[in-house]
Length: 402
Ligand code: PLP
Image (cartoon, rainbow, N blue to C red; front, side, top):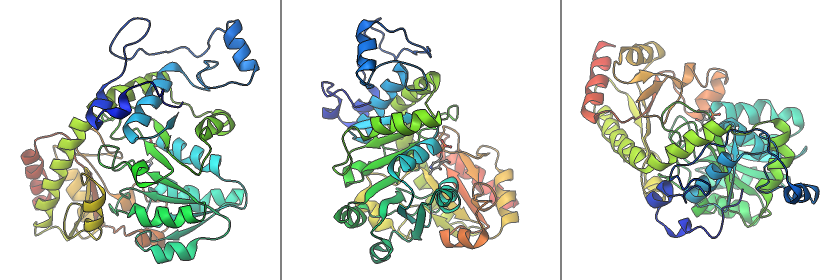
């Protein structure tokens, strides 16, 4: 729901916006209550508001929204710098609801070659069934983006820091290109998190995000968010797609998950600041390691978009990847780690590793994977909150044994 304009948060700096919310009106508790109810009793006033077609902030039924979710939406809008937010059951629900809310049969998307595997599959192998086509390009090349735009292009889609190559797209030129033609720019901010980068401040229209990662931060919740600040879209666009898409698909964020995410937001700046520092140390260490062929980290001068990242983002993120040559060695490294864990997801307090080629991107045909820049020996790392020296020792031991 739209952020309450009377709230002072937009005037506050990021860390204060993350931690602050007004006390609960009923109890004065300074922690958010959980509104667990799925059904809400009408009175004559709320009944009339529903009859009049007013949907916003009216509690009707849990699939349409719930008070804890509304609070999470307000917090997310505040930290992403948006005017409004729609919470969803997962990050993929955010991607799907945003795209199906924006697009209809015959529409066209321009998307970077490198995105999260399920997003790529949705665009390349599923939206096509509904008559929505996608041209994949290298967003680092504005000429390629310009060449891919068609009269029916409705969306330009990109990830802030792409999964898993850490590719960073310069937002200003592609936003300008898109907006000249009335094309909506959608950006997945999962890998960066709003602490590292706020795409809406760079002219992006819609941010989609898996809150299951850095926002939640503890690997114990699945959730997603769509956050908007756009001159192209109607101000009530997210409320429109809440009702015409999210509610119909049945993809709401559950109250307890909303509460866990609200709690996660409050510590996001301190967690991710430390995680970014650890990622930078680990990346520098691995780049100098004789058993590592290559490291992908936007903070390293060797990263292809290092200069873009330096100009565009206050931090370089907590995600990195490195290549150890082949798939077997990659597996020996990740299974040889004792402190870092070999696990599918990312963004939590524990350092996690993944082998993108044979895990998240397994279903992507090999040729497409190669175009994305994913090599068989690539290991992806999400830096956690462990002592950085212990982590480095852990990686050194695993690399030596592999
Ligand atoms: N976007 C990116 C960049 C991701 O890495 C992921 C999951 O790994 C998602 C979206 C989907 O998020 P969720 O698992 O919450 O659906």
